[in-house]
Length: 149
Image (cartoon, rainbow, N blue to C red):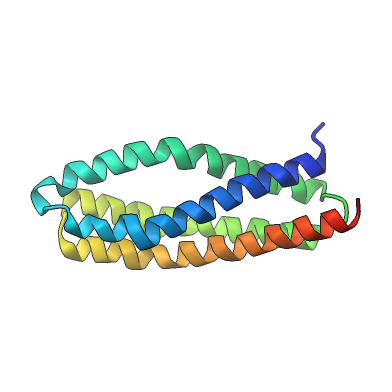
């Protein structure tokens, strides 16, 4: 139904977009929460969450769909173990999102203190590093796939 090569390209686009975004958020956006006065931080957090969802949700869904498709049918030159490694890293990203980042955002919404901002920034490092590792797997898949054309 779907060409594994096309699915790999879709995965690469979504993954690289998310890696760029997560690094921007980690280094620039989340630390800037501390510069928002506490009185307006709750509103800023709500606006951040609402606007960010429109960007990240489609990319994350493309990532998970493509990862599952590539596990079922790896792109030429790649392997199931490599696809599985990418899917495992993605599962860890999602777990980090739901177990660390979502609660940190909720805490910031309830109690918009500098401590809550630090928790958000520090808690995002595992997700940033996991997504970066996942990009490495995607690069490996692209290289292997291109060698078999």
